[in-house]
Length: 415
Image (cartoon, rainbow, N blue to C red; front, top):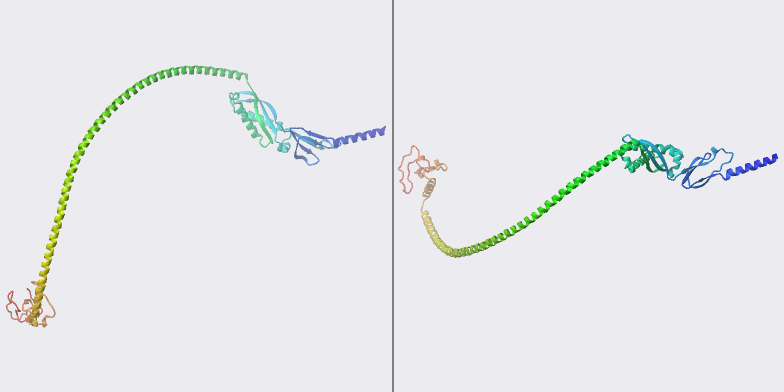
């Protein structure tokens, strides 16, 4: 009996070992991901396990704390709802029911598991979500909560994403499902709405009255404009009639002026033609006179040329006669000079010098002390104090006349 018990225990132990080593494992459901954790072989693994079955072999005698396990994460979008008691911008209380949709970032599951853990909503999302919602509601007006839900949701979503940045969590959306107001505030709000409605109704009545008055004024204005248009049409017709009359008068006046101008032009043309004929006649007369004058000038020039040629011929004859006379006189003088003595020549030379000097002129030449005094009978200024005086020859006398026996032989005397 004891051996059977031992055999039974052996068989039971063998069955437990087989079940612990061959059938233990975990199933990862669709929409989930997992991380493998083996305390005896490196701890938490980085690889993200896909949906399926993962074996977790562990002997039965091994404590649970040392057996491998999988940390399962739901990676689908999850929605959590929060009921919050908040205050508006005016400090009025209200209850808000707000939902947030989120999921973990699959590629950062290892960091999420090591930094925060599987209970990441309670640890991070919930507190940050409530804080962001309270902050947004505190900056919103009580009245805006009823008409600006979308803008308020966007602000809370943006604030929550800023707070969860780096926390390995993705925020999909934030929704305000319900806002519960204080009854007293609702009554006050209702009264205010009623007052606003009354104000709007009164405003509408005033606007209707104003519209009626405006329409009345518009009708009166249209009537006035119609009468004015009719009056304007009459004035335009009268103006056009007056314009046509003035135009006809202007055309008549223009025709008269053109006729008068044409007559004046013809008269001026006639006077111009007569003046032109007169000027042409005078011009032809002047041209004839000019032609006669030119011909007379040619005749006078021919006469002057003939007279000049005659005078030239006479002058040439006289010149030739004078040249012949001069030549004869020269020959005669040459013949006379052949009979003149040397002293006579010198005396004539000095006379010529005296004539060149003019009256009252004294000419000194050379050493006068070496010449005989008788050569200078007319030079009283150069006679010596001891020489006797002789009467001077009267004007027109020929030949030398001595005034003294002494004196300067180079003096010419004063004439």
